[in-house]
Amino acid sequence: MRLAVSVDKLRLEVHDAGEGKPQLREPAEDDDHGPGLLLVAALADDWGTAPRDGAGKLVWAEFKLAAARQERETPGGAALHTPSS
Image (cartoon, rainbow, N blue to C red; front, side, top):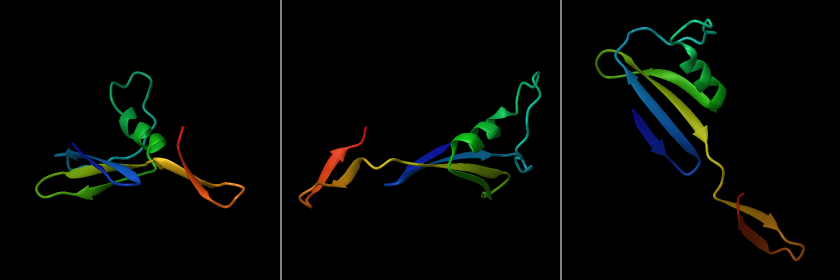
């Protein structure tokens, strides 16, 4: 697993030795696996797969980050920087 953070996003990568391409599916109630990708698709802003060196693939997901500070205009025209809540 790899995590990378930039100014505007968090990227999560999971390396997998399996050859199959992950597919979204609705797991049956008695399945003991299967909902992971459904959760990723619901929570991530973007996700996908990519080949990797050697066998298998990597599955990645990106999450947009809120700005650390919010800028707004005051009535006098000066910019105020206030922390996001």
